[in-house]
Length: 214
Image 1 (cartoon, rainbow, N blue to C red):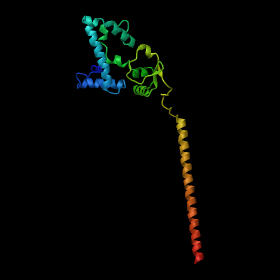
Image 2: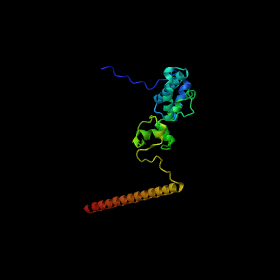
Image 3: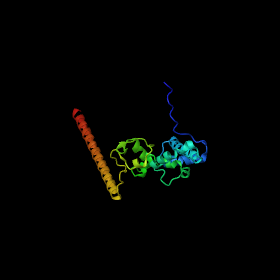
Image 4: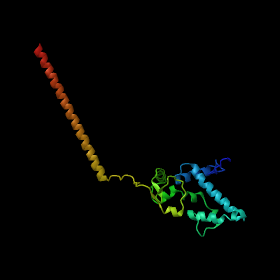
């Protein structure tokens, strides 16, 4: 048997890995899209970088890459990144945001199925999101335009936080708590008085027994 096939590396690290301006920008994208780590961002950046590289080869007249134009355009149209008026020159202006917008996590949030990017990620990971009724638990799953129409909940869930009580309800609860506290305090006082009375009776009985024995 031959050697096992090596999987293609899914991402490449930035060449200017220590550039503070780039780091600041990348961290902003990680926060904006609720990404788990920098690797998820690098995957999107690598995908766009490879795409732009292929486009540059096509624009240079390279016959090897010219035949790829229709396939690339068809794929980008299917993903909703390009349309009929998009040209190869337009593709050179694509940024990583174009790919990040097609992640399942992003679309779940944009469609209002989650209240935040982080909640969208949690819903997907815990199996609450489905495409065409089929559960998908990968936040980074790339969704095409047709599949986007069929995203919904796999099982019922209420994403809204519990409603805060009104001022009147809060006042009523406060009064109820105060009445309960007063009742408990009164019970404790009565119990203490009962214990004192019992102790006094026991002491009186003991004193009486002492007098009779003497």
